[in-house]
Length: 240
Ligand SMILES: Nc1ncnc2c1ncn2[C@@H]1O[C@H](COP(=O)(O)OP(=O)(O)OP(=O)(O)O)[C@@H](O)[C@H]1O
Ligand SMILES: [Mg+2]
Image (tube, rainbow, N blue to C red; front, top):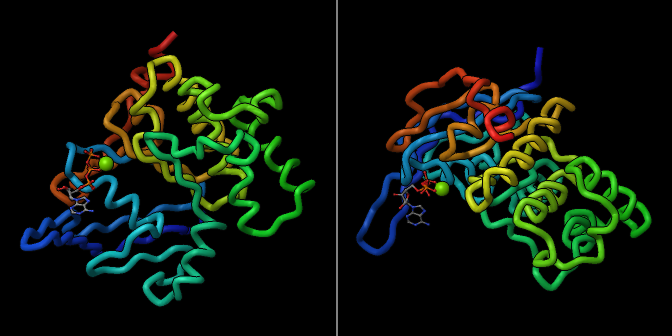
């Protein structure tokens, strides 16, 4: 039996800005098992980022429950939440979110610095993570702007995996990339998943979603169904 790592039970999220109330999620139920490769699609404003932020413990639901590894996260202290975010969740964003004044080594090692891991061990892990995303040692002293967008996103993925998290959550990871770079980024996620990593990708791009194993469709804050991917229309095969 694969291990259940995420369970969302009737998750609702209401944003309030002054008098204005927006219902972003209206009762989402979702179970994710270790090793799954999932994408979430849906129109702009349907709640995809909100949903990913709930799974990634970046925000709390208005009602409903989020369980990570069987633990009800609403019962955890902020210290315990920070611990789970650092240990078990790797986030990848559309805009890479690398720190521009840090070089590539310093960017990737950040989650390990937070954990207090000694420098020698950090560098070893950084190199392993960088190789996993198809990068090499020559990148380490560079600043993010000295790399292409696709390379920067692969550095962001290396930072996400360096601490060997339970899951990778990616919000529009190819949204700012040209097709060739998007393909390389999706190849990277696909390889990581083949090695056992749980990966969840929010995307607008059907050619990205078609590379995953299951496509959930979100509409107006609810999951309205799941689609089977069409591998012939996966960017890995459509972009030469
Ligand atoms: N911090 C916030 N405060 C108020 N409203 C918000 C906030 N974040 C999101 N919303 C609203 O919640 C709804 C869902 O937003 P969300 O960002 O989750 O959608 P999305 O599916 O990720 O859209 P996109 O594809 O454009 O990224 C939208 O109506 C949005 O305006
Ligand atoms: Mg979004």
